[in-house]
Length: 455
Image 1 (cartoon, rainbow, N blue to C red):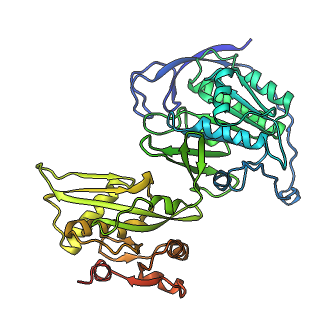
Image 2 (image 1 turned 180 degrees about the vertical axis):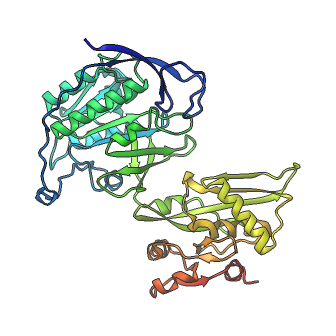
Image 3 (image 1 turned 90 degrees about the vertical axis):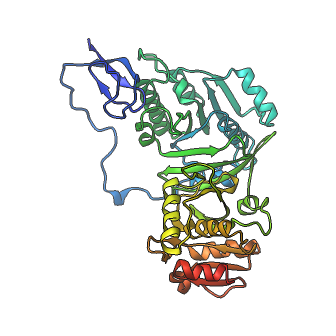
């Protein structure tokens, strides 16, 4: 009989120790250790025969894999063209952002598909079957191929999936699932790890795709150990703000496609609606001839988006001026303000600077540096930037404007939405071709200023 061992596991990072401690040595969190029992064995493990055949990689069939279409072009793009059979996808997001709504709409699309309808199994550990039907009625997702059950036992979930052989299994959520052979409570590190492992084994052996919904912590990370993200094939992050109707599905890991792809949806009373032209939506509320407003083409995955950068510079009423940003990295923003003070002579020591990316979009790439700088200068001087001008470029510490990638995609998106002029780095001018939009180049901050504010 296996000997029972006791260990203490951090519920934030999964670090284990034989003794309880108030503070985790790995992640630094306080009061996160929970006692868990594990089965150990002193007997030597017998050598097992390999269950999978060993063969040269050249002998493996490379036929293109069939993908299950979700019926939503935005979600298919994020997944790399659809759901791969046998894959496990982890979807994380804040409470109430619409994870369950999006998954129920996905199940409705597959269950009622005219081309290739399939049975979908939706497993909920948080809602009863009656509650699931109420939501399905609101989303018009009623179908005989849409099967639901309120279950928290992983053994029962895998048994149902193996018996029904559905086209897709959705588990909502992994924090409510538990294995009956473990003593720990649902949501603990051991339960999360072992439950995900059981679902992963079921998906690979039966070739059934599984989508797992996961909660997030207050820091915005998926709850549980990071090993969950390493175990699954695809990790999707559902982002958004309760004050905005738009939601972004961002791919941060994908073994079957490119990462950093995004899909944009709008939350409505009848569910999630796809946004086919996000650039037009993000710029729809833009005002004409307002100082501090600038348009910048950014790249998200394989698509180009036009975003509006807003900046407000005003006299400070405090001893220390405020630096508040939304949608961009605060440290990068401080660096750009330092460049403006050193290389351009813009004195901001007595001014509060507020910078915002309209629409709730988060910008990670440095290609928006020049647009942010121009918006700050525009607000400081109270001189509006031309309404039909887009700006793109990375700003170096010496005040130089550096080249950016995918310049043709950025220019095409700006031209498509009716912009008449675009300011780009001089290093990218050889990559452009003649277009209807006027292309102006700049190599320094001063030349960019001359191109935007010629007077």
